[in-house]
Length: 273
Image (cartoon, rainbow, N blue to C red; front, side, top):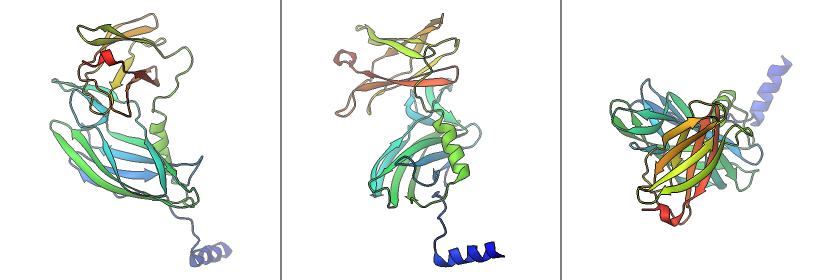
């Protein structure tokens, strides 16, 4: 009885901790998308996520789609007490539809987002416009307008936290020593315009490499040329590679044996055809 009385008293005083923020689903053909959050601020930032729920057989795209597709395009439309935010991309998979090779996510995926407030003691509002591609036998564009209100006094959301942290664990990081390493990125043949990428991949017999250039780049996928004895070599055409004023790096994601790392290779002037 005392517990019920205390709960009613707390509610009357208006000090019940708020639930963690989650937007409604925005439905598109083949799936739906929403923003979720793990709960209160920790280590100076909120942990949120852009959650895609995809129907069987449908896929959406990594930060770079490969030879075809539309990657997630996130535009900040409104902010309050927002210092910065960082969208993270879990390791994707290579997909061949019989006509082209793409870099995709199937089923359900959460893109973790770290949100940094200007004043940690005050609430944060973030509004975005999202444009993305979703495909099965056909490809359709999807769009959504999503707003997330975050407060330092919110309660943790156990389910949202599990979903975000599940895919946060798949974001490329620092691989265990001696298992993964990109050793060399060289412009092997200026006439044909391709890079040779050499890596240590441990005991894996099925390593994978993904590549993304700066905004505006349209490059192919790395082609595995040799693998064995703990090493692998890929060739990557530089056709379509470009740079921007704020980004001159080729982003390489190497994965093998359940580990993944991200490597930034500075783009040299002679790489650009």
